[in-house]
Length: 253
Ligand SMILES: Nc1ncnc2c1ncn2[C@@H]1O[C@H](COP(=O)(O)OP(=O)(O)O)[C@@H](O)[C@H]1O
Ligand SMILES: [Mg+2]
Image (cartoon, rainbow, N blue to C red; front, side, top):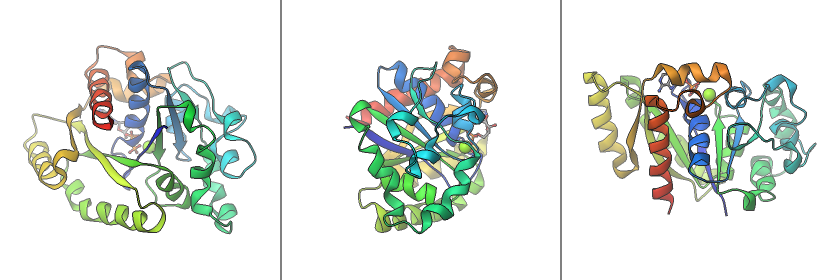
């Protein structure tokens, strides 16, 4: 059975999509069968995987609306993993599914049809706590939280854990924080180190040992529709995400 993992944080710009795309590619390099589901109407994970978000035949939107079987909507990619893509149409469906019975569990139910085909399913979430994000949270075994080591990250911690507890009570009693990953890490900055120490105290063993450094190649690769490992294999970003993937696999076992 697949491990289903949401990459989530209610803050924008913390490295969720970068983590989702590069983890997907790294896990695939480590021989895992990976599905990446884009649940953000911005479609950045879709584009970052080399798929044109405006040319989709089927997307996650059609799947959530029950207009396409998930098997037909899942696409191949050139970068080692499968993709259930998204574009701005996803933002328009909230109201259409809001009245439905079991509206929080649409994704969870359709995933049952493909779970045996994958080892790991990653879901890239939008920063909002919409019904779409709730669908993601209801479908997963755990959440990986990317965090930037800045002062505001600490301010948001209580909020974040409260939100996850509330979702846990409402839709998914098994929901766990699987791990917290430090992104855009700058080892030379005293603030980074202080915040990092604080995160270690707060999350303990859930804080991954691997840190993702600030690395320009990670920011450049999406423009080429590539995870960084296919863009510049020896870059610090590529090495870090591969290491993180290995750490995650080890912890899942
Ligand atoms: N480790 C990193 N080093 C350099 N730039 C990064 C890194 N991680 C993310 N970025 C850049 O920061 C911006 C926000 O990252 P993104 O993954 O889109 O965040 P989110 O999905 O949380 O909004 C993007 O422009 C991305 O390319
Ligand atoms: Mg994003």
